[in-house]
Length: 450
View 1 (cartoon, rainbow, N blue to C red):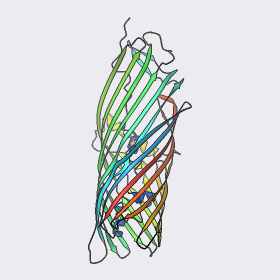
View 2: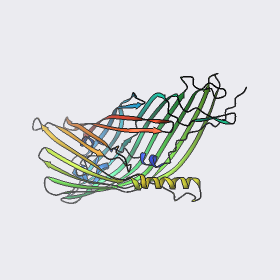
View 3: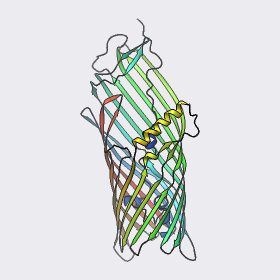
């Protein structure tokens, strides 16, 4: 007897041109700056260091000295994934990663203030890791074609999944802030945004109890490996205003305009089936896609109270995730791609919602002498899920220090802790899994004052 395996088994595609993947491009945007993030990102009414390029460029006018800075980051990440009552720990540890660098310079003026700045900074991290395995009696409807007939290999099997993602989004920013009056300032940032994500997914289904023994469907193992490299680029404009209500209270507002992000993807899929007698067959598929996503505007509003050595700040960020859309302007209205993306745009509009992100922070200068003091900081925030009917909101808290050195240098530390829990499910693993993620990110910013 002979057995013919068709070269095309299933080719389970990674459909990145979907509603969820359009949102994923910038869902976990965190910004940059050790000081600002140790305050929970509640920086719209402050912004008086180089990270104001991101939070509110109007705040740059509060800088009294020129600054050259370098920022690094580290990550302590763990994903406890539970599948069929078995929990597996999935850690990631990274240290000494480059997170950004730049310069800000106050231009001498007759009156008021004008500060220009330039920086290259990472504003989003794609780090993720998840894996699990377990024996499942649930049917996932996996069929494999043999001898011109489909045979089920779908239940009473050992299943395992492994997913890892790396990369991030950076922005090269040119920014300035200028005093419009004694109590009001404005600012503008123009950013070239680029990003890259490397994603890999592995799935294995194995007949460990020797359930499938009848020729020609004496399956031993099915392996699926999918890879995706996504590259993004676009231009963003952010403007801001900041005003002093009195000597203690300041308010700020920043607006990030909608922009178009160009996306290029490289897909790779490999499938392999092995049988009890050692027979093996596999197939590989590659694909390339490019498309555009319209990113909605962001509105930031904030207030800060400063009394002597104490500063308390809060901010509110609004973003309507449902306004994210695939650009259909350059597509043939009768094409399959147009119809697919039109349907995904509808899914985004109905499946995702406007959200308000709430952030707050406090900063205290602890003076040891007239010439030396350490700044203590703490903060946190609530980041609602963009999904319409989801309860998977994230919360985080942060703390940090600012330590001066040799009168011309400053070291700022920040540690941001984020926790969330989410269910994970795909058609390959109908039992589903639960991920409990705890992420700690360390930022170290070294600044030279001149």
